[in-house]
Image: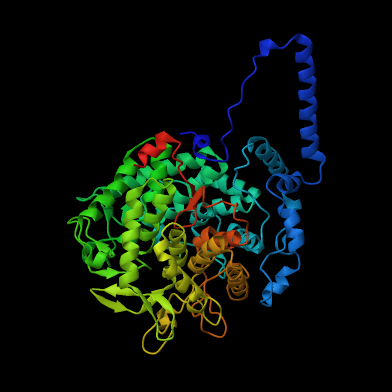
Length: 576
Ligand code: DMJ
């Protein structure tokens, strides 16, 4: 499936062709002269103009450089809490001058291709682009090819989520590099993917993590850049994941050996169950894999998961986090909109949006699930804060995870279409800032509303912050949907907190206790920091037409996937 047929920004309008035979010889000669003059002019522009990419971005991607000038000075207003939040290009980002000449050619190519004007608008960066540069440079210097960076010990790091698979940070960061116009870095990452990203190994991986980070990252890189290598690798990896669905119900295993195709579930999961947030967070990527490979098997696998879920009774309309893939029955009745449940709900809504609002089943499943959540899990604390509790066999645990904080953005996005949730969003989000942050202005992993506390982590093992994006993700959605400056204000405070407490010599690190007086670093720069946290910050301070919601849906790792438009019948049919 050619990229051009999927993307709004690469479709060129039909033009009437003129037969060459209709020109006389002299006319042909004049045309040739004009054409040669044009080519010479273009090359002259590439080599002699000061920096054509800046000019082009000013003229053709709307004048971000001009905007940046007018924004200068507002940063200090922001830091003191007054005025609106804008980041000055000249103060906060690296200069354009270090760009490679090939980028100018690419910019010129974009100019020639982008005749529809519907391209995702590539803008000047903001402060997060500088943060990205720092994270990337350090990863490249100390941990190139490893999954993640240890920024204090300055070496590579890997968790058991990826087995012996390599390069998680590279693949997760590809689209952020591209979106932030860090094209030299994007080229280096592309070359690494082409030469080194290998799935033929005896590695036991998490199907969910590899799907959202690797498949999602490769798909977005493909859709943004059009480079075939990403499509090829995404489909190759997708094929490798298919054996995970070999269970009696078709609900996939959590873990899979890429070589043997043997799967199993996490040993800690209730009764050998698969996890809702894991098997329920494959839909977006698999729909695109189906579209790009032309193989219906990808869509069939994820649509079958819905069938299994539709057959089951839901306690109070809620979805338990555990489901046994052999029996097709629920495991322990634990319900959460945070860890173990979270992105299942997100993908119901986004499946509908990504299908250009044709996936009516996805829409209804989301609506019903949210109604049950509103009724059974959303509560008010004694101090008046609205939060989402967890549910264990009918009893509420008055705790909310950092992971749950993404729900503000999800509910807001849904509210744009489902008006009945407006009240919920209004109250919920306004209290967000005080709930999800600590004295360091960084949110703990979980916070409680019992035993006389209000939104505080009371257990030592819930006080850490690992550079998670969820709070900033919600700020970004809320900003886009309301344009209330407080979301940029809060985002800017998050930037300052990250700079103050998480930035170390060799990159950015999580902290072990957000209530401590000074940070005790955990020495890990998570790949989702580059994929999500920095990207959402960047988008928070960008214009709305930069990856507009109308054309793009973000997977749960913040990888943008294009909406598959109705007028593309071949793909639209696969989504039904
Ligand atoms: C990311 O890998 C994804 O957002 C996932 O859905 C859960 N959260 C982590 C980051 O916190």
